[in-house]
Structures are given as structure tokens and as C-alpha cells.
Image (cartoon, rainbow over all chains, first blue to last red; front, side, top):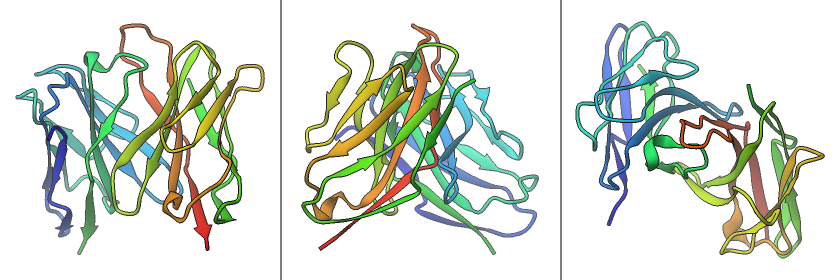
Length: 115
Length: 116
């Protein structure tokens, strides 16, 4: 079955630690996205990538970093500079390099908690 | 810049009753409109979307939404809800960018709770 996988399901971060969230898709989609979800705030875009080896900052990129070395993979690193990382993180992908109107397909999410 | 306002953060309703989840948007250009549904601790799934043509769009599970350009609204309706419709619903807009990247802007979400 085609789809998007995110791992781990739960992740715990200690103070000053960088952590990496995995996102893999086998839909052969060009574009991939990372969103952060906080209660009552909807989804906010962290980073997006329309094609391999290229990515752009979204609305709340500070304290996060990404890479896009393969079409199938778009890992997100939450750095120690992100002072409030506790949230539900969602990865998505879409076809046509993310052209307007294209449906975004979402993974099951990773919940990040700070110890 | 675009913005989306979902007018109700929570909507409680009894099973088999009708429901309307309200969504208004603001944009200086033409838009595409989406409704996504999120079940607890899961990702989002597309419910329906409006790209062009008929302003009334339907989903396979009985939801429908109507694009009203003059009122800049895209309200979601279902004539008779089931317990299984309990979820959070997100309205989203994307500008009419043609083949260029179309950023998706989400509303704050509406939690629909269906009571027996």
C-alpha cells in the first residue's frame, strides 16, 4: 500500500538535545511538507520541499532544520534552539511539485514531548 | 496573504441530527478550498475540495460543502451525523497559483462531538 510513514510515534527530548523525526513516502510525490500542530491553533507550516535537494522555510522555521536528499525522505530535526518543541508533528506530501490545488496526503504524526 | 476562520471551536450534536461547521476565508486572489478530517491521534485525511465548477461539492460519506464567493465562505454540512463522525475538522485554502507552489493555510479546527 502506498502511503506516508512517520517514526517514531512518540519522541522524548531532553533539554539541549537535538532530535530527528523521520518521514518517508512511497507515493512518488515531488513535494513534501512538515507541519506543527498545537491545540486550538490548527496546523502551521515549518518547512516544505518541492523537489529533491531543495527546500524552503515555512511560517515557523526557527529552531528546525530539514534535508531532502532523496525523493522519498524528508527528515525534520528539532534543534536545541527550539524552546517550545512540545507538539504534534505532521508530515505530508503532494504531487505536481506542490502546485496549487493539489491534495496533500498526511502521515500519522509524531508526538514530541520534552522531559 | 490568506487567512481562514473557523467560527466554532467545538460543536456538540446528537446522533442523526444535522450539523454545519462554518468556515470563512480572506484572500486577495482566487482560492481553492479544502476540508480535512482528523481522528484522534492520527494524521489528516482529505474530506472534499473545491477547485472549480459546481459550487456544491460532496464527499463519499455524506458531507457536502458549498463555496460562496460573495460571502467568502465554505461551510461543511451533513444532514444526519453518526457517532463515527466524531473528529476534528479543518478548513484550508490555497491560492490560485496555477502550476506554482500553492501554500495551504489552515483554520484553527472544529471539534465535532456526536452524542448517542
